Length: 182
Ligand code: 5GP
Image 1 (cartoon, rainbow, N blue to C red):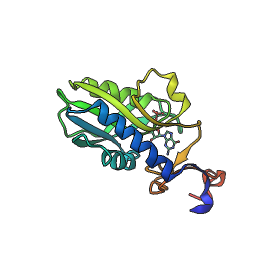
Image 2 (cartoon, rainbow, N blue to C red):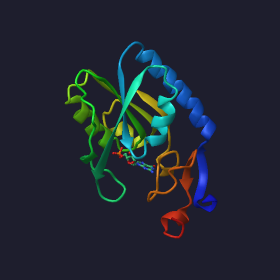
Image 3 (cartoon, protein in one colour):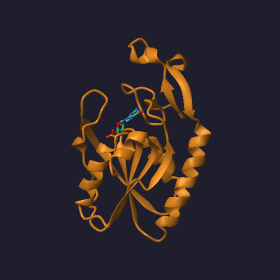
Image 4 (cartoon, rainbow, N blue to C red):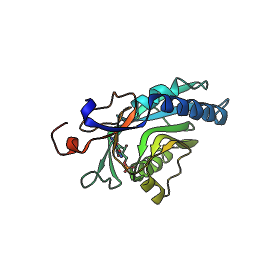
């Protein structure tokens, strides 16, 4: 796997340090309030596990899986629910936990969908955000890192279902995309 990686963009210790800060900010904002974390499968599993364990605020967890229709690697904003939430959102404070916001189209759809279910509040925490995300008006309250417009893997993020278990975020060597490494 070592040869497949081009560079490490964010090390495990950088991710951990930033998660400490995000958790402190979330604790401060939700002090004394009920909070439901909604993880978006599959990419958000690592950030969900590590962020939630840093919180002192008592939380519940639920999961959603969506697929975004688009051409190639670009998302179109047309989203299909593959797995829906089990929780009733009525009156709840909801925090969507995302791995990465790229175009922001998926998240924008998700925000609208969850808000329409009667939640008291719906906010977003994402570990990573790419520059394109700024083009759509999607309000992301907690951002771990703004990163360049490069395809990244690791820490929950995959390429063809591989690399999710890497403890850091990195970019892939071009030969992987050319079909020799993945
Ligand atoms: P968008 O914000 O464009 O609607 O789509 C976001 C989704 O595209 C993410 O949840 C993730 O599944 C996928 N995605 C976007 N950028 C990357 C990336 O750099 N690496 C990986 N592995 N997935 C990405």
